[in-house]
Amino acid sequence: MSNRSGERSAQRIRLIVILVVLTALALGSFWVLQVMRRNTDDTLAARPRSKPDYYVEDFSYVKMSETGQPRYDITGKKMVHFPTDDSFEVTLPVITSLTKEKPPMTLRSQRARIEDDNSKIHMYDNVNADRSAFGTAEDMHLKTEYLLLLPDEDIARTDKPVEITMGQSIMTGTGMIANNATQEFQLLHNVRGTYQPRSRPSR
Image (cartoon, rainbow, N blue to C red; front, side):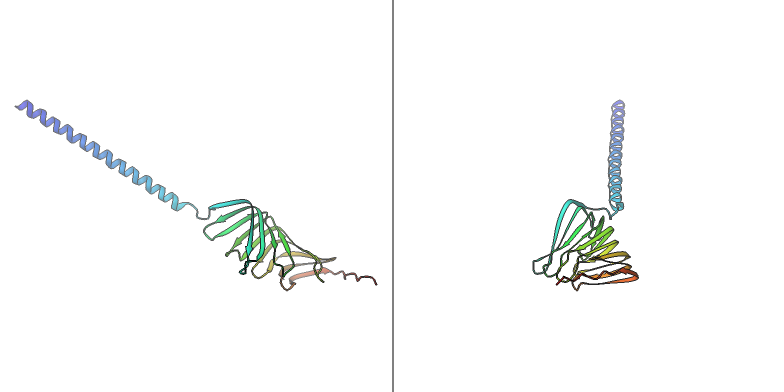
């Protein structure tokens, strides 16, 4: 009887040890899972939210007016979207006004940033704007390193040096406000220019 009791006690001890080991393994696995899950959550939380969520290459985008008429077209080599502020960065943008009531204008630069629901377009590096002659207005070319375009207001402005060529006349200055709707522009500082009167048609 004593031998059988000893065997039973030994079996119980072995069973208890096995249960303890299995419980420890289970708890250890649960702990490892929680640590991995926590590390994953920390990694996702630490991921910079300024990273883009999508991009488009060789794109063309047309902005429509409230009446359904095209207002301007934006094309570019690449457009990247940033979800934190719903802004876009564009490589080699070309912006062309499409409103029939106003003279067409085309703007180019090396890069641009579009923000505030497309109401602000910041153009950077080798910015060029061209408007063909129409009516009594001569053709115009503008060159600067930065230009803020407000397409809803048809206004462009900069605080950088700018050069404007209208026909044969050239004007330079620092800082500019241009209104394409009213065909008015203003140079703010260090204004210099060479004015060439328009030639009158011979009789």
